[in-house]
Picture 1 (cartoon, helix red, strand yellow):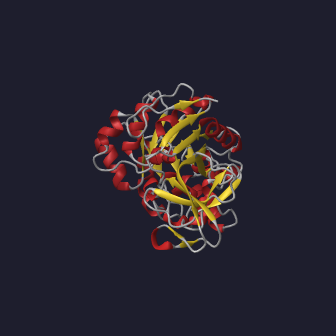
Picture 2 (cartoon, rainbow, N blue to C red; picture 1 turned 180 degrees about the vertical axis):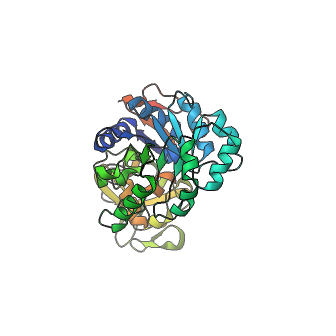
Picture 3 (tube, one colour; picture 1 turned 45 degrees about the horizontal axis):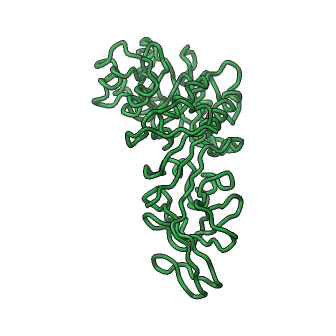
Length: 371
């Protein structure tokens, strides 16, 4: 079966990082979050492009992700780029943290004890819970160990905002105040803001910002350049008469003479079934509605509005970004991006990736195309 084509514009990615860097006020350093394999776009390739643009701190979720990123970026704990691990120092992580020069963001007194026991003298950061109640030390955890932790010289203290994409909510201000109280007098670089926090304004920026989804073209960074295009091959076109149905369960019925195109792509490729009968693909700026259920490998689409059916139709494109798809599916752009499967042919576009040839997640050379 023909593969869909997932095109990643590395120039747009870099432009988004630079735009968010400009928004990070004054002398604030702008890092980059590349967890979940660079939001599904290949952390090694994304990381290289961002490192060349000037990013020197990268954030991942797991030590294993950090190890793979270090292999792609090179460098070391002492020379950088710095790679910080949100999950901290989990049991069994010591060798990965040591051998790949990773910085765990310690989330509990237990992790602090583990780190000092197994990797004394190795760099670490601290993650505090300022009110999200998800990860990090709460004030009652932090107060008894604060002096001991600070004596070891953490490289960063961070927390995470729960509602930064909803700036009108008072929880943002409450978390800001709590973070200030917990870190007052620490004399350690601090970080509170991901993409949404950057947009809240300078008082949320502190010393380091760490944009994630905004780099990849997602909300709440509405000024982001589109990074991803997903083009699905047309396998077959057929004509229906009124009353004929399409797909599993016959959930779509032709009300007039209709042309139906069958596309290569389905829920095995990360295209959610929630788009059945309500989603659309595009031929340029012309929408073509999905007709019938999304199946494992195939989509069926009403192409009656097209004078000619092209070889491919776009699910993600400038006319329909990941957040529009997410709205239709009742989810968020993060999920749309990170669920994209590995059956697509990935093409990396732009001068920012002209000589990048890191292997993709399947271990094969990643094709790179320049304009």
